[in-house]
Length: 227
Length: 47
Image (cartoon, rainbow over all chains, first blue to last red; front, side, top):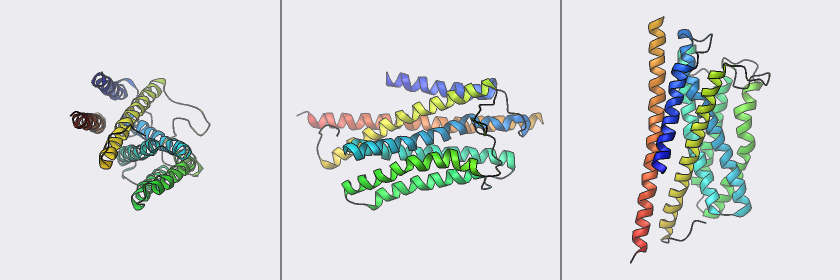
C-alpha cells in the first residue's frame, strides 16, 4: 500500500515536471525566451517546503515544552534536518536560475541573503543540540530555540525580502500589492508542486522520526512503546 | 535563439529530475531502513 502511495507521489511530481515543461507558458521577460523561468516550478515549492518544515519544527517544539514527550522533540529535530535539505535545494536551484538570468550564481540579492540567514539559524539549532550532553536539557533548550523560529522563519522568508528597497528577484507568488498576478496554468503547476513536496516532506518526517525512535530505543536496550 | 532555449529547457529538466529522483530514492531508503529495524526488533522479541 505504501509502495503504491510512493509511486503515486513519484508520478505526481513527474506530472509537475511535465506540466512545468510542456503545459505552463514561460514567463515573459526572462532569458532564452522565458525558458529559464521554468526552474521556478521546483524552486518555489522547495522553498515553501523548507518553510513548512521549520514551522512544523516550531509547533512540535511548543508541544514538547507543554507535554515533555520525547516524540515531539524527535519530530522537531527531523523537521529541521529536512527543512535544511529542502532549503539547500531551493538555494541550489535559485543559484542555477541566477546564473542563467543574471550571469552569476550568487549576488547577495535580499532573498538570497535571507535564505542564507534562515539556513544558518537552523544549522545553529543542530549545533546547539550536539553541544549539550544531558538529554532533558538538550530537548528543552532546542525546543525553546525552535519556538523562537516561529517568529524568525516567517520574518526571513516573507517579511525581510520585502523590506529591501531593491531586488533583482522576480515578484513572489503573492506580489507586493497582495495579489496573485500570474497565468493560471503557472499557478496550478506551482500549487501542485508545493502540494507534492509538502506531502513528501511529511512522509520523510514520519519515517525519520520513527527511525530515530527505534534507534533511541535500541540504544537504551529496550523495546517499549514510543513515548 | 531556439538552440539556447532548448538547451536551457533540457538543463532545467535534468536538474529537476536529478533532485526529484534523489529525494524519491531517499524516501525509499528510509522506508527500507525502518522496515529492517522493525523486523530486527520483532526477531529479538520472539523467543
